[in-house]
Image (cartoon, rainbow, N blue to C red):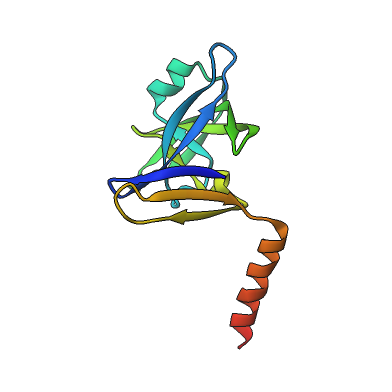
Length: 139
């Protein structure tokens, strides 16, 4: 289970980074359900963390512009599991996208300092949700 807070109307959760050159550290990320990849970090942060370049890609930004973005790799600890994930070097604030939340249930209490939680969806719960959705469709 991953916990965060709602601050100024933004759902924020911590992500733990595991880099070879320093002890683990945490950065706060804004959940962006309109972003379908893993994580973004400002280019200055990517540089400071010395993240290895993996590739580059063209992307359409939220303002509609096309941009060529570099993709870097980082090891994170997500829900107590170590993962290597792509990081897009873009923008001015860290964003967490839906690819990293795949298989999780997101819940947000929309009030000042409200609870934000991401809970792994168990196979049993996933099946129940699918059954309930199917039942609603056919009735």
